[in-house]
Structure formats: C-alpha cells, structure tokens
Image 1 (spheres, one colour):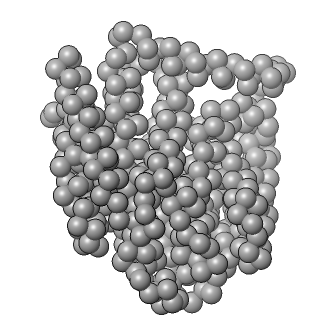
Image 2: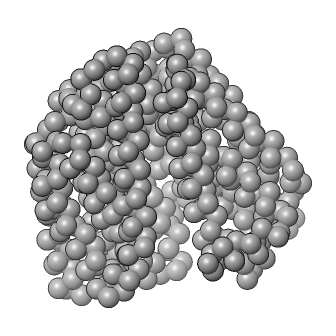
Image 3: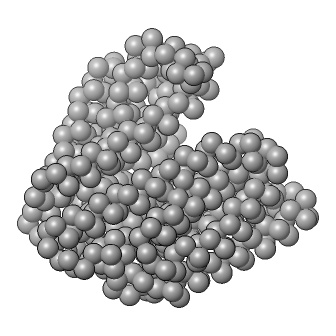
Length: 427
C-alpha cells in the first residue's frame, strides 16, 4: 500500500505525469516490437526458423544495450533531453515502419536485422534520457521513490505491450507486420506525448560552460570502464568480482535454455505446420514467458527476506544449487508441463541471484566507482545472454531436444555453486 500512496503523491506533479506517460508509451511499444520480432523469427511461415536465427534476433535485441549504453550518457549531456525523447521516438516509429515493410516484402535477413538493430539502438538513448530527466521533474525528497517506481512501471508497460502483441497475433492478425505497425503507432504516441513538455524542461544545464569535446568524453568513458574493471581486480573487491562472475554464468545458463524452449515450442511440441499449429506453438511460448515472469516476481518477493537471513552470497549459492539439481530433472523429459515448471524455477533463481548480486556490488564497491562497475555489469549481463544463444545455436538439433545442452548447463550451474561455496567459506 505504501507504493500506491507514494505513486499517488508523485502523480500530483504535472511534469512527472507527463514524463511517466512518455515512459509507459515508449516501453509499451518496446514490448510490442520485441514480441513481434521474436514471433516473426520463430513462428512466421516465411522464415526458416533455426537456433541461429533466434541467436541473431537476441543479438539484435540486446547487444545495443551493452555497447551503446555506457556511451549514451555522453551524448545526453550534450543534447536537450526533451528533444532526444521526441526525435528518438519519432525515429523509432519510422524505423518500425521500415521493419514492417521488410517483413511484408520478405527482405533478406541481414537487411531485416539491420532495421531491427537500429530500433533497439535508439531505445538505449531514449531509456537513458528518461532516467536522466527524472531529477528535473521530481524534488529531492521524492526522487528515491520515483527512481524505484518508474522503472517498475516501465517494465510492467513493456510486459503489457508484449501481452497485447501476443493477443493481436493470436486473435486474427495475418502477419507479424501488423503487430509491428501497432508498435510504430505507440512510438509515435510517445513522440507526441513528449511535446507536452517544454524543450528546456529536462536539461541539461551547463551553467554557461561549453560542453566538453565529444572525442574526449567518449575516450573518458572508455577509460572509466577500464578503471571500474581494475577496481574489481583489487584484493578487497573479491566478493563483488566473484558475484559478478557467478551472475554472468547463471545468465548464460538462462539464455541457453531460453533458446531451447523457443525451439521446443516451435517444433518438438508442435508438429503441425499449419497456421493452427503455429498458433498453438505461439500460445505455448506465451505461457512459458508468463511462467518465467511469475518466477521473477516470486524472486522479488522472497529474496529480501531470504538474503537477509542467509546473506546475499549464501542465497546465490542456494539458487545455483537448486538450478543444478532441478534444471536437468525438469527439462530432460522435454515435456511441456515439466519444462514450464523449469521456466518458473529458473526465472526465480536467476532473478534471485541478480538481486543478490546487485546488493553485493552496491555494498562492496566504493561509491566513486559504483556507476562504472554497474555499466560493466550491464555489459556482462547482456553479452552472456547473447553468447549463450550462440552456443545453443551450435548444439541444438532442429526440434530443440538436446540432452547434451541440458547437462552442460547443469554442469555450469554446479561449477558456479562450488565457486560460491568457496567464496562463502573465505568470507
């Protein structure tokens, strides 16, 4: 109830309401676009779905967040952020239209992926701009609450957008291009909503000082990331470095199994190649996403108390140990019910480990290095997922049933558990 009360206080602020509206429309459109891209790659009759195609789609969706993200702030401190929100959303709407036409025209894969890659790269600037602009519309005493609630609201909007895309696709849309057009419309709405704010409202303020040279800013950012890496290598930061390594390994495992579930939904559990068969496979994928999301939510509920009792590293160890045992036990039958149970468990342990890693990094890293270390964390988190998709593409057969991949993932969970046990004994 306190969260609802805090949100009601924030919603009395006119400019906060307007900025929040842009975020909800923008991230809702992201959810629509991402689901349309995934279903086009996996379930479209025009596509020859393969694990390689899925890995390529994941790279398109995630790599811009890794490599563009650390440098986005450099440009956001040079450009008016209201204009970034407007032109960024308008550009995404136009690029989404291009993606839809490429889908309808059966364009070559590289051209299609280049279009989608541009959309997700621009997303990084818009999301960073929304976060950077928040202190301009919320006073100090409410800023912590706003920082807590607005990303959650954005995630819920993205989830709702993804659900809307599934519903549209399952209830009559003849093509994924129709769903992409819906995403383009929402991006356009986000652009128009940003115009309700004054051009200079969101900053940045330079107090009469000229902006630093772009080249110096970019090279300074790269040096800052290297400084963050060297800080983690210091003897007193072993716990933070180990937690990041363990989280990277668990994210890799989760990514590999995500690709496997996509292939199982498309082929192993759906031998019917007709439109009805593809719709059934898409429905199964929707269930898997929902069940995994329920695991993420459960982790958010139980991790604070569990990590409080055991300590964050011991809770991570418990999560990794559970995955070591339960992942092969539930996945190896390759039955829909048991794999859905695995999706819930793996969602819970992966998110539980991530929350614990956040806590360890926040408490073990010096404040002046914390932003740079979290930028490295973001890069590791997404690169691990994309790398896992690439490895899965090499190991998975056409129908997605790969005992070798399941056992490899279980072994990696086991190694992670042992490494965390050593860390807990050392500390």
